[in-house]
Image (cartoon, rainbow, N blue to C red; front, side):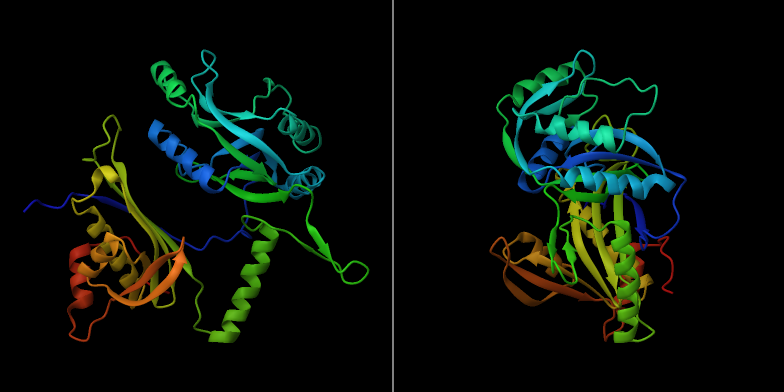
Amino acid sequence: MASEPKLEFEHSSHQRSLSTSRAARRRILIAIELRGTLSAEIDGLRRALGSDDVGRIAPHITLVAPTNVSSARFEDVLARFRGVVERARPFTVDIGPAGTFSPTSTVVYLTVVDPQDVVGTLRASLVSHVLPPPSGREERPFVPHVSLHRRLGLDGVTSAIATLAHFSGRFTVDQVHVLEQLDHERRPWVTVSSATLGGDQVVGRGGFEVTFSLRESLEEEAAAMLERNWASYSVHAYGETWAADEPYAVVARSSHSNHSGHSGPSVVAVATGSLQGRTCVLDRIIVDPAERNIGIGAQLLRYVEKMAFDRSCESVRLLVRADSSALGFYLRHGYRQTEVLRAWREQRDFAVVRRSLTRPDGPGRTRIEHEAGPTSARPAQ
């Protein structure tokens, strides 16, 4: 029987508080983030080309290039950003085919077809009223595009342009986003603010006016309000022993992966979820297709179980498509199906599966600890 592959696990688990202090300067850009099926399709293209931006920044059309802004000016920048965007109206652009800036650079991108130059007009207003370029920065001609790969190489550029000569998609722009670069590994970009073209909906005119805003994520003020008041409500509802959900992410790397040309251990699997009281909820678990059927998924699952045990969780719970082979995988690893959610997503039935980390006969937790090995997980508070 073949031995299991040796993996390196990285585990992060924290509560992200947007009310904590930040550096004196914040690096932001303004962009149109693509969403839905088109975004997923473009991410697939980026992954196929080997772009290291997958998971680091969403597919997008940059309107204002990355700029450093002082924390003292940040809220004023956001207010002016919303003012400019809300005066514009929603519009539609066509995406594709592929293009390049070669020979100036070997960037490969998808073109943005915008006959009325609405994107250019919106960008000009943002540059003029929100984030003018720093003095000394050379301004290049604005070419709206969706980057696929920033440094592909000349041969790769030629191949990509030919392969994607007939790619096309259509996207309706109804929101614009401010993204901030975090000082974490890979320096990812996350959305910190968004504004709706045409403005938000106001109700109660003449009385107590309320403005409703649709956002893909909460801005800092709203996130702080939710965090503060939800914690207060939860303590009142559940008692002083209540603890906030704790997100986690586990990354598995291997030096023996099938990704040739990669220096150092490569990411071969990822699991994400949250600790909710005594339950570890597993939201996503994925193994690189090139590394499947050699035991990595089982090792990752055991690692998650060990991490949950170390934090005093009593069970692991997840949803899995009821007609998928993945359900059999979990059943073979000690999980049991507790219910079926009919037409839960995309008209598919999903099974709720759970595994207890404590068994009446005693060996459950001991076996998990033995199989998973030591972790750097901190004890539950």
